[in-house]
Length: 303
Image 1: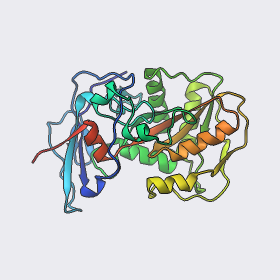
Image 2: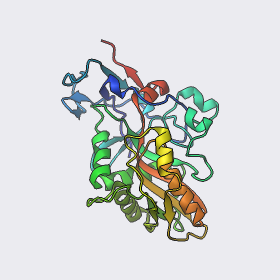
Image 3: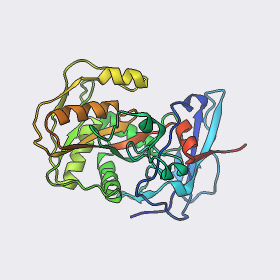
Image 4: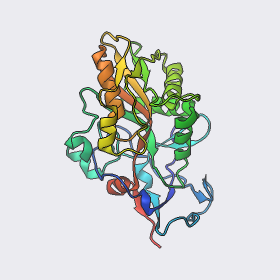
């Protein structure tokens, strides 16, 4: 079910160089061999075109281009025919963030998790992600899919398929005794939420029941524009679980992992309701250009 990794050109303004730089070690996904290298034509990937750089509209004084390092990106051929780029290897044992190769022989954790992140390995045992989400860049087609999932539940079936594959590669079973719990929306909306849609799709594939057991007991802001500290304070002690899990393994489902504060709060609530273990499953692992450069999974395109 794997295909060749794709060399992808990413284009961003200077504003996308954000976030902490950190690292960690590999898990069990293996690097793949040489393969076709899709390049950017306009705003789409064209697998059979000759290599060329995409020149975006001039919206910023600073524009940089980067190219993915082929051997660091495992891939998976989805049933809809799309070759899915997975999270680069190696990645953090706890939060799935891409890390430099050398970290594989040391802690196995990115800098954030080593220092102590919301994904603590205890309340929230870890997170598995289908792909990376790279904000504020063009040329990475999975960004549009992740945003579609977040906004209206689109691509839930595809990312459930990918997550099931990655779980298998990571040696993670979804036992029949387990329960899938989606992270609730911070603000009510008419459209289906990304976590709920992804949870439903995972349930159809795994046979595990979905329990909408979590809810907010106070008003919280949307996390998208908040800093790490603001995110932590925003969701701290904000959720309650209205069901008891009697030692069952719980799989918390969210669309995108950024800091992990929301997943940690959900894990705290379901643990208080008797969950035996809690693992996060997300479609996208947020990774800024700075952290991807540090991990060595992208390089700057020289003029």
